[in-house]
Structures are given as C-alpha cells and as structure tokens.
Image (cartoon, rainbow, N blue to C red; front, top):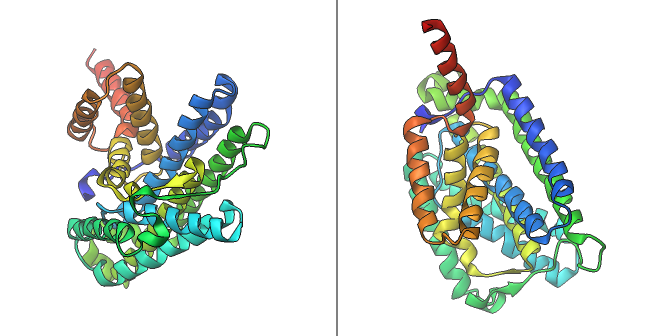
Length: 326
C-alpha cells in the first residue's frame, strides 16, 4: 500500500480542492433545478465524504474491506433516533457517527495492531456479522430485510428542498475535508507520515503507532457513519443492503482511482467513476459497465499508480521531455 501513496504539492492540493468546491457550488446553477442531476450530485458528495473517510486510514498504512459496517451503522442509528425523537437528522447523524466510532474503537483496540490487509479482512468479516445481526436478532427494530423509514434531511414542503439539501451536504463535506486537512498539517499528520513510511523508525522517535492508528481508525469510522446517515436521510429509508460488499468496495475504488493518501484523490476518483458509471447506464450499458470500470481501475493501477491526480504531472513531464529532446 505504501508504494502507491500519492504525494501532492501544497499548491496543487489547495488550488485543486478550491476549484472542486467552486464547481460544486455553481453546478446546480448551470443545470438548473433538474431533480435527476441534483440527486446525482447529492449522492456524489455523500460518497466523497465516505471515500475521504476511508482514505484517512491510508495515512497510517491501514486498509479496510468492511467500512460498510460503519456506513450502515451510522445510517441505522441516526434513522432510529430521528424517527423516535423527532430531532432533526442533521443532529441525529452526529449520534449515528458516534455509534460508528464506538464500534470502530472496539474493533480498533482488538485489531489495530494487525498489519494492513490482515486488518482489512477482519473489517470485512465484521461487516458481514453486522448485516446478519440486523436481519436476525435485531430484526424487530431494524425491519429485517424490509428495512425502516427515515426522516428526510429537508422536508419536501420546503421550496427547492433538494437544492437546500445539496448545499447543506456540500457544506458538511467541505468542513470534514477541512478537518482532515488540518489534522494532516498538524503534529498528528507528521506522526502519520512517519508511521506510514517506516514504523520502526517512528517507534525509535517516540511515536506510538498503535495509538495513532487507533485514532485514525476511529475518526474514519465516525465520518463514515456520518456519510451513511446523510445517504439514508436523503433516500428516506434504509435496508440491510447498506452493509453489502459493494458498499465496502466503492470507497476503495474511488480512492485508488483518484490517488491513495491524498486529500484530492478520493474527491477526483468519486467524481470520475460516478460520472462514468451513471453515463454508461444512461447509454443502456448496464452489466458491461462493471467490466469497463474494472478495466479502468487496472489501467490506473498499472500506468498511474499515484492515481488520476498524478495525470497532469505525468502529461507535463512528458511534454517537457519532448521539448528537451527536440
């Protein structure tokens, strides 16, 4: 995993994220109040939060194949609390995120000492366990496979409610990414980098890898739970399918495609893959799109191991090389 972690220049990272934020603000104005486009944009921003949360693990050299457990738990807990109390989903999503973080803490304390993909396999198994419990022992409160209804983020009686919902989610995403940025620029971020590059040297420097990895795992679980709650309250219902394997794999695909270990990577990856995925479906290419996305991912790993965000630098170096030889 360490070899594929991208390194962004500070200017590129800052300007790129600012540009994407500006585009997120003006896109609805370009397309107008198109419900299909707005819904697509909302889901895209939610999965940017989810992918960025998963990607946060990679800063300490960790991986997860079962983040759907935290995504789904955040959604279920928030939906149940909001339905029972009448409290705004914008507040109950914090409770959902907290529940996901507590479970993440439990898993982390036990398993965070495991190396990279050994931890990933544990999280994969845990996601399956959670889904099974939701449709069996806890079926009376979760609705089993039928699921349960969840209050919408914004009532449909509010004028342009979907647009209001979109901008609120963009704001939440911006704040979360800003939080990640501040963490990575702090001493914690320096400790992350030291652990990722050489754990033994980090220990020799007085850095406790277990503590920092546990912190990264809990933070990742928390914001994954927030993302899950946002999706559920946008959709208006939740079923145990939220714990399925594909929900665990999407943030991995987005992060690898865009660039692991970078702030902009999960954002770019989510945008490109989502647009391609939805565009292929609109062309009537339903099943073949799995093959197309898979081939694209393989090509990115082979030719752009640092992700799509490294493409501009690769192109620039290519033309600089041609100029020198001419």
